[in-house]
Amino acid sequence: MERGVTGPAYDPAKGDRVDFAISILGFIAILTPLTLWLSWSTTVYYLALSVGVGACLIVVALTRLFPEPRVSAAPDHSGQRR
Image (cartoon, rainbow, N blue to C red):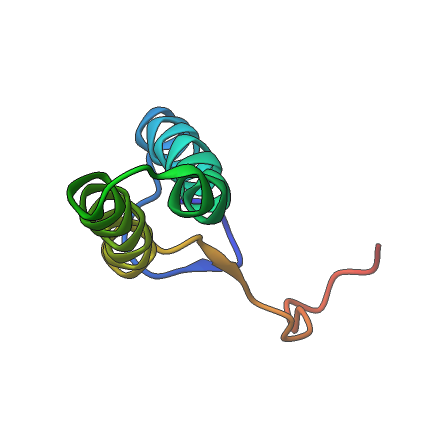
């Protein structure tokens, strides 16, 4: 683990996959209002609504399960000058 990074060990490969999944789910969430407006029946409306809500819930779950690493802003008291 790098100095100044707190929390569990951060795996960059896993982080990239999670970021990609959040991006795709974000596009789905952005397109949800358009699909609701274009829906031609109540079945399609509820299907689009459930997909949009599901995408938002998955984004929230992913951000809770895989948080970004926090870099400590505390000063370095090692006694060495920079």
